Amino acid sequence: MRAVLAALILMLGCATASAQGFNQPWRITKDHWDTSDEAGFGAFITVLGDSGCSSSQSCLRDPANPYRSSDGRFLDIDVDCAKLPYLLRAYYAWKHGLPFSYVDGVAGSRFGHASNRIVSRAGMIDHGGGIDGASTIRTMLDNVYSGTFRTDAAHDSAILADFYSPALAPGSIRPGTVIYDTNAHVGIVYRVDASGRVYYMDAHPDFTISRSVYGPQFGQSPASLGGGLKNWRPLQLQGAHWQNGALVGGHYALARDEQIADFSLVQYLGTEPNANGVPRWSYNSAPLSYYEYARVAISGGKSDFNPVYELEATMGTLCNDLNDRAQAVNQAVANGVAAKPHPSAIPANIYNSDDSEWESYATPARDARLRAAFVAFRQELGRMIGLWLGRDPRVVYDGLNLQADLLAAYDRQSQACTITWLSSDKRPVPMSFDDISQSLFAMSFDPYNCVELRWGRDGSGCPDQAGKRRWYGMEEQARHVTDPDWGAIAGLADTDIRGLIASMPPRAPWVQPMPGRPSALQ
Image (cartoon, rainbow, N blue to C red; front, side):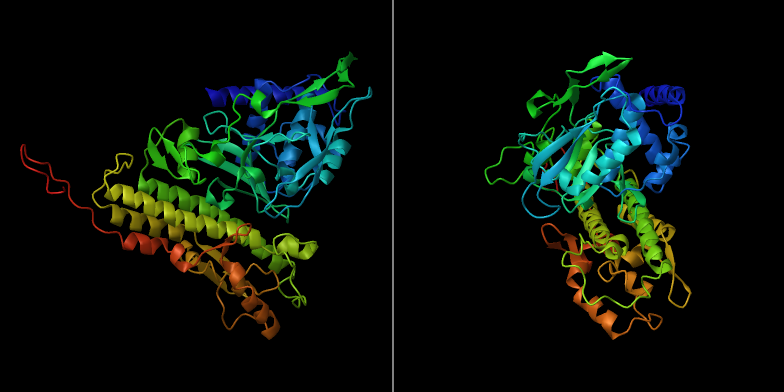
C-alpha cells in the first residue's frame, strides 16, 4: 500500500511539472513541508535510486525523473557525494513550490576530532519576481561540502543545522534520509526493505554514482561529529505575504531538536545504561551490535535471519561495490593517468586533496570503506555462526549441513562476482570475489600505479619502474586502513571469509532429556 501511495504522489508530481512548463521560476506556494511532501520526495529519490543512473547529470536526464522536460540546461550538472543530497532536495522543492534553506558557511574542516561551527545560513526567498531555481541551486552547491554535515548532533547551535538525528524506527529512516561518514563521505537513502536493510546511493569525486547497503563501511562516530543517519530538519517560511499566488518575502525558522517528534540520539548513546561511556544496544532484551540493532529497529522487530541468505545478500552488495571500484580504476587507465610519471610527492592528506587529478582518480577512501565492509562481513558471519552453534532461536535454518551450504553459496557467489580487467599488455585477468578478498590489502589506491598493482597482482606485465614501486611500498600501511578518521587497520586474517566457514566446528547434537534424568549437554 505504501508503494502504491508513493507512486500516486509521484504521478501527481509529474502532472505538476508538465503544467509548469519549461524552466519556470521557483515560486514558493507552501510555507512548510508536510507529510505528503516528504512522501513525495522519498518516492522521487526511490525512482532515481532504482533507475541505475550513474551520475547526477544522468539521474536528472533519466526517464525516471518526471521533471526533466522542465529543466533546460540545468540538467547538465555533476556533483560529488556531499552535494548530491542538497541537489536532490532543493531540486524537488523547486519543482513543487516548497520552501528551502541551507547552511552556507561553517568554521572547521572535513576531518579531525572536532565538530564544525555553523556561521551562516541562506534561504530561498522570493522578492516578487520568482526565484531563478537553476542559478540559486548552483550557488547553493558552491557553498555546501562534507564539512557542512560535521556538526554536533546532540546540541542545537545558535544557527541550527540542516539535519537532526532520527530515531531508528520504521518510517523515521526512509528514502531521503542522509548517511554521513566522518571520513568525508555522504550517501542518501533510496529504499528501506521489510527486513530493515537500508539501500543508499552516493556520488564520488569523479561524479559517478554507486549504490550499496548501509553498514560498517560508514563507521560509527560520537554524537559530537554527527556521523551516521540524518533527517532533514523541519522548517517554515514565516512572515511572507501572498502575491500573485506565491509567498513573497519572509524569513526561515527551523525546528529545534526537542520540537521534532522522532529526534533521538539512540544511534550514539545506545539503549542500555552504561557506566564506562561505551554505548550498548538491545532489542526486546536481546543484546545486539549497533548495525544489527539498527536493522532490527528499522524493520520494526524482524530479528530472525537465515545465514545462507544473509551471506548471499551481503556478497551481492559487496559485488556492486567491487564493480564500482573497477569503473574507477578503468577510468584512471583509460585517461592515461596510470601511464604518467609519478609526482614527486603524494598529498599530505590522501583522502582530501586540492590536487584535482588525485582527487578524481585516486581511491583511498573508497578502498578503506571496501576493506571495512569485508572486515564487517567476516565479523557478522562469525557472529551468526556462533548463534547457530548456540541454537539461538533467531537463526532460521532448516538444512542438514550449514557449513556445506555456506561453502556452496560462497563459492557460487564468488564465481558470479568475477571482476575481469585488462592487464597492461591487454590480456583479460579474471578475479573472483575470493581472489579479491585475498588481495584487498595489496590493491593500490594510487592512480599512477599500473592496473596490476591497482588490483594487488604484481607481475611481469606491470611497466612501473623503481620510482613508482617505491611509492607503492611507502603506501603499504595506508592500504590496511579501514577508518581513516580513527586510524583503524586490518589484515588478511580479518577478511578470510571462506577460511572462517571452512573452520566451523561441528554443532553438538541436541538431546531430549529423559524425565528425571539430566541432559547430556548440561
